[in-house]
Amino acid sequence: MVLLLVAVAATFTCFYPTLDNDFVNWDDQTYVVRNWLVKDVNLEYIKEIIKTPQIVGTYQPVTIISLAIDYKIGNGNPFPFHVTNLVLHLLCMAILFWWMKLLTKRVEIAFICALLFGIHPMHVEPVAWVSSRKDVLYAFFFFAALVSYMFYLTKKWKGVTYSLTLLLFFLSLMSKSVAVVLPIVLLLTDYFLERKDYRRMLLEKVPFFLLSLGVGLIAIRGQQEGSAMMDFEVYPFSKTIFVGFYGLVWYLVSFLVPYKLAALHPYPFDHITNIQWYFYASSVPVLILIILSVIYGRKNKHYIFGMGFFLLSIASLLKILPYGRGVVAERYTYIPYIGLFYLLAWIFIKFKDGDWKVPKWAKKILLVVSIVWVGTLGIITFVRADVWQNGGTMWLDVTEKHPDHYYAYSCAGDYFFLQGEYERAFELMNKSIQLYDSFSDVYNNRGKVYEKLGWPDLAFADYNRAVDLDKANFGAYLNRAILKVNLYKDTEGAWQDINQAITLKPDYCIAYVNRGVFYEQKGEFDKAEEDYTMAIKLEPNNAKHYRYRGLLKYYTDRKEEALKDYNEALRYDPNYGNVYYLRSRIYKDQGNIEQARLDARKALELGFKVKQEYLESLGL
Image 1 (tube, one colour):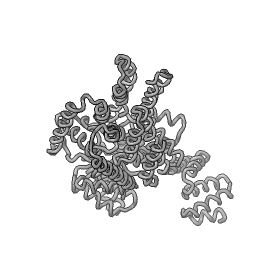
Image 2: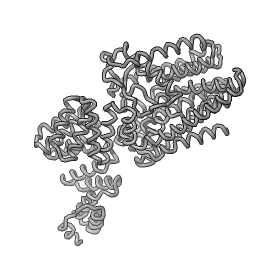
Image 3: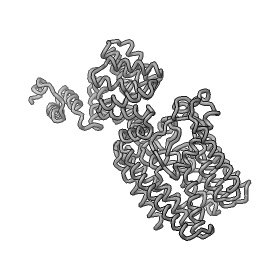
Image 4: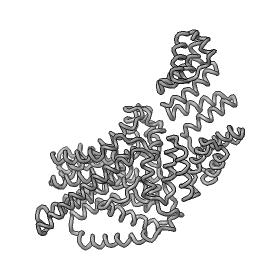
């Protein structure tokens, strides 16, 4: 227990900087900030979460429910999300310690595995990034299932522990689909424990494999629907296999020497047919690993267990099936590295127990090197945890590590645009275009900067370029639609663009608001109300949507209904001066002059400019 507390304390110290981190502009907006599914926790929302087929290409209802709970606790503040991520990481470490102790009967092995799992720099991303909640959550259920399985093997309460293991596996799958490897890990556990009843071992895994198969198919479909899966006609297997070899070598090297870490490790090429020589060369160390494993490890159960755990759990993440923007990802090591942690712990035990005869001075040197290495890992983790402070620090870090890749400059520019630093955003987006002039999103983002800088014609040209490059760029269609109306008075063209944006992205909240305004201008009030109501459904905590609908109801002579919408708006934003003014008008119409005066004064206090004649009509 003392050793576990030491590991927990060390890990908490290393990850403490994450607790004051903000959201980052990389999936956090989709998972949390603009995701209406997390804005409340009740039966209706949970049903919708379960029915939603994919978010960012993955089906993960348990993860989304956990995010919804955090949103409820902190009303959207990032702090509860980061606390939960860190707590889950610490719990994962504690359960891993428990499992290793049950499996090996050696507390030293359990401590080494837990400590390295806790502080390794490659594990910063799953903890520091809110959108990586799925990693720490699926690992929590994954490890819990392994512990439950160990109790199942003790032949006590077999029905209960078997059912519990299956349930925990299901929860892990519903947190992240890569948990499909658990049945293989269970077989590795059987091998390590030298179980001999092979028929029973296989039969009891059948439900696990069936679950894995079903969720695996759902995961592939989700990646395709989320446009994350690449086309094998463009990215043939004869090329992607070398991408897999490169990833494997990179993960092995980064285990010992975590160098040049970043949130994104982009493909260093635009087409798989142009991969660099070192991707092909990576097949050499892979071949050497295979040969050495066959010669020296095939009869060693410790090596087979450790290396097998690593290889089998990392295999599906090696980008042989190409998806995403990164050729490798640090979060992918969260569970696979346990196999390598075990191998190091086993080597330590061999030296400690004197099974491997070496001079005392060599043992001392090895001990010093190990302590320095572990300490260095902790320091790197502490520093990396703070890199995730916000989208600016995160993306600028990526540009430092990969200065010749366009994507990070575009995302960094988008972050500074959101902060109102338009000149800096403009500079970063221009750098992105200079490196790669065919990325649709950066033109859409630069168009927004041009608008803020007062150059609408240049903005319109960028929106056109964005749509030309990507006919599915829904954001560019919406932005172009607004300019068509405001700048060129092209109502028909704007109407086509905004409908196209909603067709491309049916949950595009701001597009419904803008289309609602268009409907109002056309006098189609029922359709306008439908769009405002859809916006409220998508973002139920957004006070502006209630204001739009309330104002529509006011002008269509439904003042009681309008009053309800204004009250909802103020519930979500108590400092919304304009809504206090609008509500004051309703109270005045109803003859409630005192309440109208209170709201008018509140609007003034909050900085909303109320016309003098209206104030005089209230006797103010």
